[in-house]
Image (cartoon, each protein chain N blue to C red):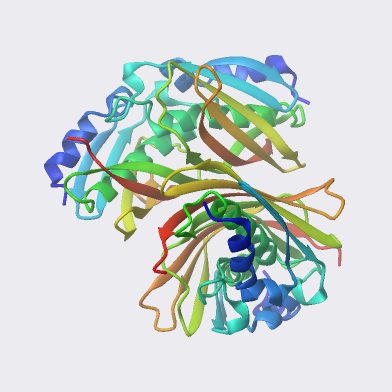
Length: 137
Length: 137
Length: 137
Length: 137
């Protein structure tokens, strides 16, 4: 299995996460939390965080949740996801949680949830299919 | 109907599009094209453009395609989308095209496609459901 | 709000549910359970229940869960859904549970889960977007 | 590659297709058409064909389109799909076309479209992810 340090290192190589200001808050077996403080530079036309940015952090959370359960010499790729946007991303901070629903040898299915800063509102729900691929290292 | 100037103005208010360097290339009735040059700041751990960034531009393309067919005093919100990632986003420039499949009074369904710079590879496919909402103006 | 008798009556008008042998097991506010005994007539090429049949019962469960929270003079339509198939539908009986995640004036988002007969295996997961429409009655 | 006779034989083993009255109309490399005449036994509460039945035929069309491009000793499984319902399935006959968008060694992505009998209305749009698995034969 990929140890949690590998997961964090991989996250740190995602330049986009630095660009938008996202932080990997916690890594557990099958579960990863990423947070993102509100910034004006991330908004859509109404001043809320853009759906694509919401998607970015919950995709990374789901991918890394899958990686915690993948074999050590494997990396993960997002095959596809679906996201429902339940509330406008009008939050001081977004909390994205990715959780493995089912982990197979090739495919892992994850569920992602994006909350506002107090975790009392669900802003978005994701289901993602993630594929493990052997790394060339 | 929203005239194309409104569509472009609204796009210009999406701060995230400036942040990532995306440009609205063209606006037609029911069809919008957005392009994005590769930048290191947008990458995931393998150096490709992050799935969330790919999603951001094609979501905006679909949303604005829907807006070209919405009533003049309406704005649009993304209800949900699904994206399949067909190839790694290893391109010098991404071309995202959003097209209306069906436009209803309340809901519009759009199809989005993201190509590489020569448009010979499909990198991602989106189906999105978009809702028209009356603006308060 | 639609009372539970309306929900059951509407389910009884779904001829396909009779055709496949599905039963509405329970109706609560925002939650509906439908069950389906295995039958050879419902199978795909490997002898498992066909993905489309699995989808049929969980779509009805989600739709009726939404209906329990819709205004009394409204009916519901499925706008779209996504289903992930986690295990083959190799069960003596399928149990499909539809639950409202968020109920709005126009759109309701439901989560559906299909279990095997002992509810220890998740066979499929659905997220569905459902629209309330005023009936002509 | 699976020859077209294998594809038809496999379709004929899908008991549900017989149950609902669906017919495999044509098989090409990467493209399969399945048709379904309207029957009262397939309807939902408004007398239209149930979304799950629409899904059943387009899922089979997509799966068999993928099978035409899979290695000879492989079978296919639906990993997940998303369907948007664009119009009520108020048709004398449904025509479901499944087409391969991208075929990989493990995963194939298909696009499905369901038309009414004159093919002038799109009733539903599917994107499906399908996995090839080695058969035990």
